[in-house]
Each structure stands twice: as structure tokens, then as C-alpha cells.
Image (cartoon, rainbow, N blue to C red; front, side, top):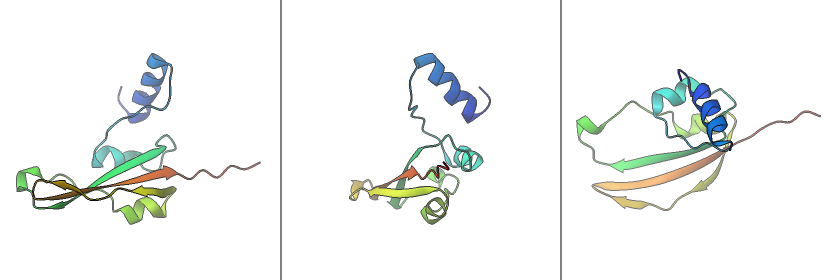
Length: 99
């Protein structure tokens, strides 16, 4: 599969089910952010010290996600991690249905 949509379609047919859970990174997310096939986002945010070799591309700020079509539905408690903590933000798509 060459695109995220092709991958989701393939997995849906293969397993005859939805939802399909796929972990994607910042690049794939940015390329697919405005599409309607990402229903749920679980964004993990690490606060602490990282080695330079562990730092990846910048992820969209949560304010940008919230300003689009996603609604924040849950924020986890802080989860202790090495040299810092993790927090998970869960967003669900807001769909406007016209009758």
C-alpha cells in the first residue's frame, strides 16, 4: 500500500472489521490530517529530558488539532517515565451531518 487510506482499506477488507488502529508518526499524520478517515487521535506528549538522538520531527500542537475537526475528550493523568512524564490526550472527530 502506498497511502494511509490504501492501508486502512486493505486492513478493513482483510479483517472484515472497523475500526483499524494504526500508529503513525508526525509526517504521516500531517499528510493525512485533513482527510476524513482518521476518527480518533491519541496523542502522547512527553515532558522531560531526551537525548538529541531520540528527538524526532515536531508534531502538530494540540491547539491545531482542536481547532480543526477534533474534540478533546480525555486527558490522562501524568505517567512517570524516565527523566520526565507522559500524558495522553484523546481526540475524537467531530462530524457535521447534513439532512
